[in-house]
Length: 436
Image (cartoon, rainbow, N blue to C red):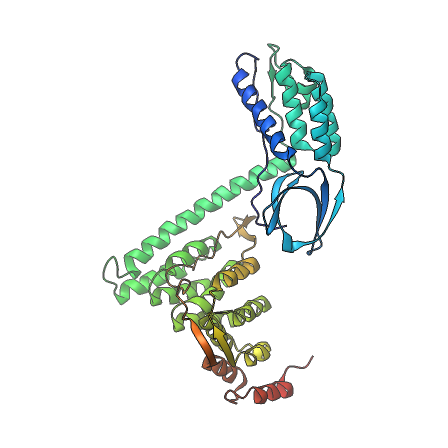
């Protein structure tokens, strides 16, 4: 299943809160909900009367009912709602009887009484059809607003005046933890926002020639202020704002990120090392990555070497040279030269996604003696200073491409120079590669 697929869940009446309901006062609401339930049943009535067990190539399996074939994918009704399943991710589909088909059959034959719909709701509960269960309970109280079993199943209680109300319940431990997490998230976002204000003021007031003349004295004071920010929650503001500045500002950004031994800093340095538009910024970022000795960085650099965009390959090779990454020598040898024909597609967005997937996970910081969790929203340095969006030239005839950046990286790592002789480089590697 596409993990990023939009999930559209039929929620007819599920989020309604009833506080002292009377049949006369809410007749319009109930009629509207009844029509929505009827419309939902008419929509799914035309779908195949079976449920399937979907087995994905990733090894997952789940139960669902195909409601629409949209060519390259299916719209599938699951117990959580409707989602999209790509056909190329499906290993096989095992057919089995559909609980939704049985529900539609029972619903069609259900008597129009509160008791009948309540009994059908109990059957839905046994089948795990939570959406349909709630619809049946609500339909029961539409027929009889005072039907006690359905009211109680929906969580209602009578107040002192005999009215049906939903009582305020004590929060569970999970609910309290979720509420605390939400409060922490709000506090963290507030702190991050405050750093955006501070960094923006420093950058625009002392580092940006767009606003006023920048003197060395002003710039060095700004640099001192930036490097004095040691709170990791400053990383989003630093990376976002400084990456939009001049080369000098972006070099300060590399210095600032070098102070943080966190994945979010590594993520932004990695993007700078490959995608920044200035060679000095790329080089400094790569040298800092080399000092971190993180094998995940080398994995993402290898991904960049497989890019279909030439300058990404060359920049990644140069970065590996600056990092003195001996383990990547075979990868570099394989990209010394290439013969290609035809157009070249932009692939940097995919590469950036892989970087974020590696380094953009939850981070735990210690603040005031307490561990708090923080989730980076995005890669902050992806601003005007990077190269995404630069058009690629189209080659319509066979060409041999010799990558001097790859050759220079190999020279920097090995201390040898065999030009573009791939066999000579491979021979050196076999004789000098690290032995386990």
